[in-house]
Image 1 (cartoon, rainbow, N blue to C red):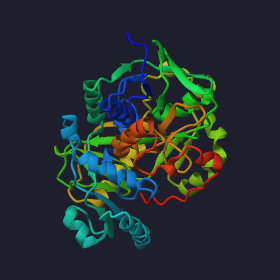
Image 2: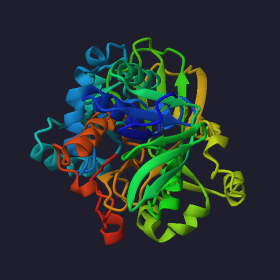
Image 3: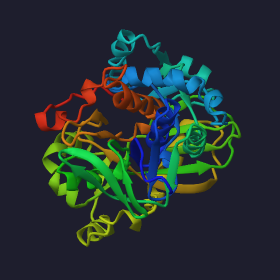
Length: 422
């Protein structure tokens, strides 16, 4: 890299980092993205591909509605095939209790002008003809969609490059330099870059990157396993969230996972942040499994403190979870007696105690912007987050209200009652 100066350095080449670079470069800003591996190798390419407004926490919903409008024309803007399908999103109900729970979210949708409705079992089967009679009904948002995660980050990268953004892949940021209370540069494994603004979009690595600066960012890794199934009969163009969550590509392949289960590999941060996570664990203890194993040992030996040691987090998927997801699919839909798993993978979501992201410019140190902690919801929000970060940096104030996503809420002890339903 000849020019060792940049207006902005973005740490992390996932969808948030790549979209931030695009929107900054689009406005003429000199921006460098530093990524320890390659763009989109971690959770940005390992997620389900849902682009949903439905079921979001009320704090995220305005952002996601604005982002939905971006997604509708994003292929044209980036000049790329993203496999965008606007087929809606369906949250299934198996009993009256679940149906009532979904119904509680409808006033939130109405307040924000999002067209969402409850479907009877008969109405559901019109949208998903293969659905069996054991499904009682569903919640449906027709304007939701899906896209292919493995295509989106590279598309943003290419578009950002045409606007002048520079990408340094295989280049871990070792530490952020602070002088007189302000960002002054970053030390990378390939040298120093002088800058006055750093965007932390490092996903699961953000807490470790922030710690030497005295920034206490509570975030834990939650592992989710996903499978790709060989082409099956056409089910629905909608993303579906039930005991199994799935979306179907145009070639008939299914991407699927258990709808609510996750696994937390215990680490040092599990103890450090334990009090903050007690409420969310108690609420999800049936679905969230705690695992004591190699990850903790590696953490104790400091093997996650060297960012260049892990070019991409690649945890082992849970075959047991995937096989259970297959059984659920076969029990709930006709014509799926034979399902062939082509590939399985897993990824780590960076989850905050209230399951909401942090999108905020810090006052100490000045020049540091956080865009992280998306808790498994970041893919769909990625484009609007990049736009908001560019506005925070260039306009001092974003065009949407991000107060509920401020970093200081953790220190203030705010206990957010989640309004998300899926």
